[in-house]
Amino acid sequence: MRPVALFSLAFLLAVPLAASAETDRYRLEKTPEGYVRLDTSTGAMSICTQRRDELVCRMAADERTAMQDEIERLQAGVKSLEDRVARLERAPAAPAESSLPTEEDFNRTMGYMERFFRSFMGIVRDFEAEQGRTPAPGANKT
Image 1 (cartoon, rainbow, N blue to C red):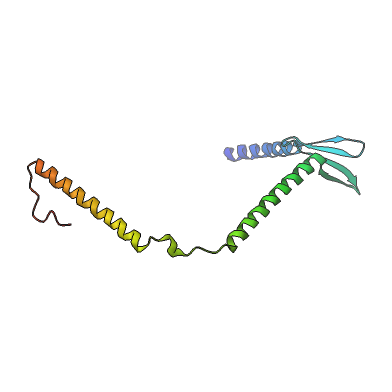
Image 2: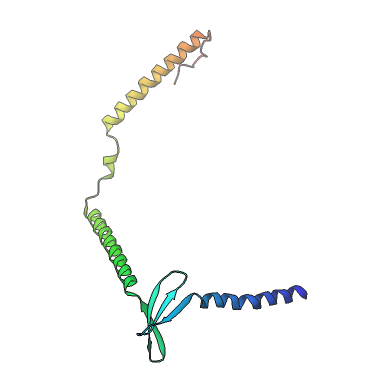
């Protein structure tokens, strides 16, 4: 029973501390026009005015300008990407066969490979002859 009581006590003490930390996040300062609200964790400032029994806050002018500049920058980037996608979609697609080698290219490559393997097998035969070994019957067949 004792662990439950300790847990309950710890919980009851932690709730007000968490609420206190959240309420301490903002500071209000009185001005002739209303209030300035400072978010102590981010540094953001808002101008607040009293309207019909409620406090209405809006971002300070310098933050609004910075946010508007960022929105315009992002909109320009999106426009640029949309234009690029449109250009790519209008461009004729290259046929798939153009990326494959021609018959002539294939035959030339096969010729290179055949010469390489014949030369390599000659080197192997010479090496075996130097070592005094004779190749096993059928070893020269590929």
